[in-house]
Length: 339
Image 1 (cartoon, helix red, strand yellow):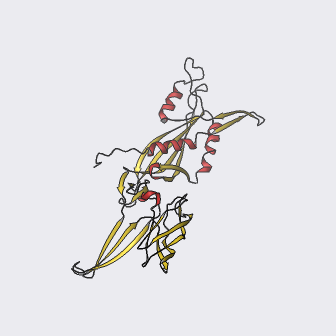
Image 2 (cartoon, one colour):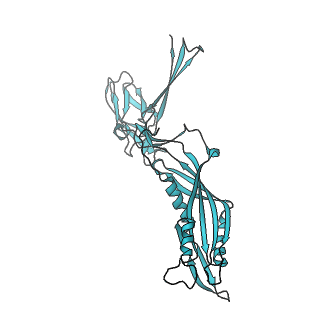
Image 3 (cartoon, rainbow, N blue to C red):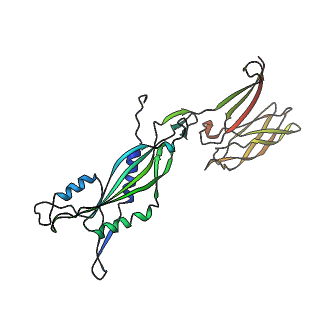
């Protein structure tokens, strides 16, 4: 089933880290009877179960307890509750995400993601109502009812996604029981839902450079058919020479090429004459940042002795090593086949 492929994209780990980042900078203020701020506290946040916090609080049951260190309130904690498949966000599993690798022969490919909903709970522990309410009122306004977090889902393919975090429910508990000297705690429980996407193994795939389509006239797919073929041509510039008498008088560009350096390609003119030379004028390539393409050709020397139009050959960009980011030309060919 898994074809021996080991992969790990840290989707849950990233989601948990992003969730914690949202709530790790909450402060509360305590005032005196005149309304003056006498203390500002940053509320600690930790990944832990609710029961572990409650157990720590119960270790020091009364204010007269000695020998134990009481957990300081207020504080917050959060934990994962469940993970459920989200059929509503399902897309066709045969779709792919692809990204060039800088090679002209292969690309990176991964199947489309599988959607899951991650349920988390955030706990707010306070020893009095005022502290708890300050924390809650700094959270609720941002969830109406959801909040988006940007996560780098798959860095290898530059896939960045906004994860929707929805506040589904808010619960409240007041554990103020026992005598006046017993420690009391107020617990707010906020339930959140995160929309996650899980990706599988990232594979290398060869680049398709030719596509052939056969169109039959007979529905039984026999007899005469037309073959339509598309192929990727190099990014090398091309041109056609013109003669005036027996000398080359100009070169007309038929394709500007792309992916060249600022100096441009060398031009070779071959035919039954000799001495013809030409140079190029370059311009910025609008497709490839930092690259150039041929703008025009200038005849340096028309040569002599040409009785037929000579062949013009432009040097290939980057010594002929074309990458997937370079300019491509698509050649279309038609051919009728009789069988």
